[in-house]
Length: 79
Image (cartoon, rainbow, N blue to C red; front, side):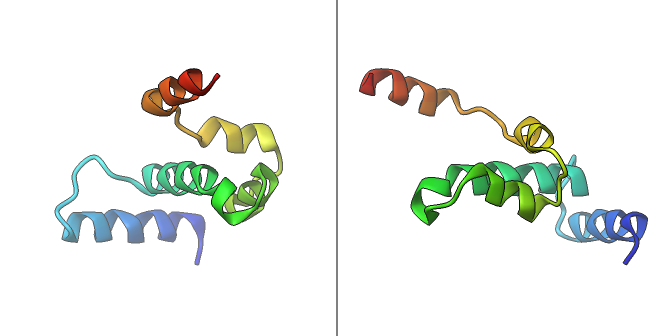
């Protein structure tokens, strides 16, 4: 499957599901963020997420990970 056909497939799937504002990129971003948040439970590292995402650079992977203000607040309380 070519990258463009994969994008088109996701676009059609999201449309069938009635999801608006979604794209293959937003799905990718969600996957990478969720995977990064589950790393402690899986015993993995950010390198594992990088490999799953197919990124050459760990910095690219980091750019996909969304922050979580609630988690940041909990973290500060632990410190």
